[in-house]
Length: 113
Length: 119
Image 1: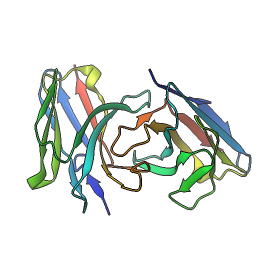
Image 2: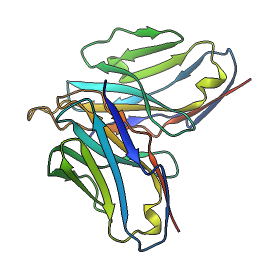
Image 3: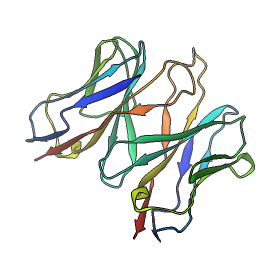
Image 4: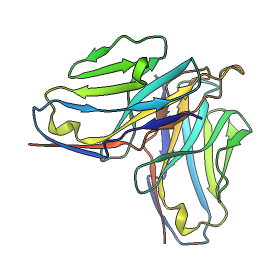
């Protein structure tokens, strides 16, 4: 069966510091991969998605970037964190064809101080 | 552009009551998919159900049931005999089928409904 893991689960970082959140999927190949952010107020915002290695699409301009160095690995990064980057970050995957269900990881709580 | 509206921000019920969570969507596509997810206090989003736009049959799974009506663009979720463990934020979501291999579809979420079930 497929599983998705992301880490770290909780992170407190000072403003201006770098960020790296990592996500891996097991039990499937060539998945679509996603990073979502959930800020206060509960709304879920799609940040990035990827349909293959090295292929990244950004949904909103921001202080973050994403990379997919391997088929089942998705990394969310920032060179310099802002206070507004605080939130709950969720990695997700879906089998690579239309209409399929997106499954989410456990999430990572990021607090920028 | 697609949009999902969950007008109920918060609902509070007493255990064993039935509760319905509303979801209204907008899309220009004729082929699309609707989802419900549950987010308990731990934060993880748990998939509950997926429906495609060609299947308007209502579905029941234990105490959960879903009413999909294309005529009113609604996909409502009912919990029968609610329990304290049902307390969570529930999200309705919509995705459109993209044909360019169909591989790069995305979900649009509603803002969620916080359900609190009191003992």
